[in-house]
Image 1 (tube, rainbow, N blue to C red):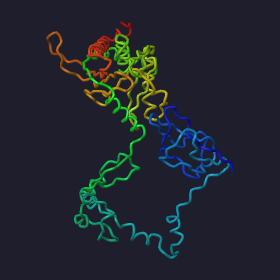
Image 2 (image 1 turned 90 degrees about the vertical axis):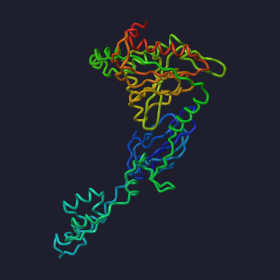
Image 3 (image 1 turned 135 degrees about the vertical axis):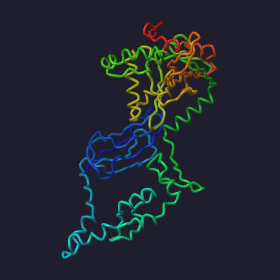
Image 4 (image 1 turned 90 degrees about the horizontal axis):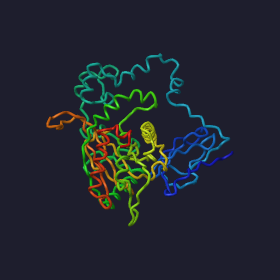
Length: 413
């Protein structure tokens, strides 16, 4: 027997422990080198643990949900072992062998096969009542359920129906009953969800958060996008969205009002000479904010490609810790979910965040006339300890002006 250890991958210096999720292999299963055995969740990312060698899954040292540290042994693989064959299904296959040889081929099962079988009329009645045929005793020939049986069947109690219909947030966690007998499900927070909750609460406690709003006419961006989106996709292999315009507009405003791109360190204000823009992305495990490094140096195509990659890997839990560390300003796009207006929470240690919402046709007044325009409401939350209302309002106005005349973004004016 030759044993190879499976260990926890190296975690970030700021992460001391992680949680094992669910093993994808059982003892005795065959394992191929580099096959993913389990995922390890930290408070920032989810890391995959591949098999270090091929062989047989021989031992689970740490079970599902265990807290582990970098380099810790969590399982062992026997590189010389052979997989255990799955046992054959017993009862069903053995039954015909013990049946009397003289029994007619169709006679024995005939009396059984009709039990629980409903006539067409009975089937409809049971379906309308929400009653399973298997719970009704049939009075017809060979136990068949008749129309009379269906009419006399009782519908299930309301509480049972509600319990069955209640959606499960996590299928692996059973539904229980509250003190008043109603169904509920208690699911532990993931490490990522708990960390997000902790940071958001910290942001509200430590920052003097204020939000300013403005509206932007998106017609210029929409026209420009419609004019070039097909050529853009053909040339760059990615769709031309709206987020790249918001990123460019934000960078233009941050250059004009540097305090929006600053952060507080003790009693000092740090003015960053670079523009690392965090893009809030929803994932199955919670909110993550990967960073567009040096966004001012990226083309619109590079921004779109990077954001698309962030979204894909966030859904797969494959974003790296280093990709979500740092950032000088963030953008949260609730509009993709239909949000009309919100007050985003600052992502510490940053001092401001832009909230983008759904673009809708609205009635607005232009030159004394009521006209219909595609309007997006922008919201910028900022830390009032270092950002005064003047800089916040003017910064948001700068973003509005850039979006309403997107050619300015290309000319950087």
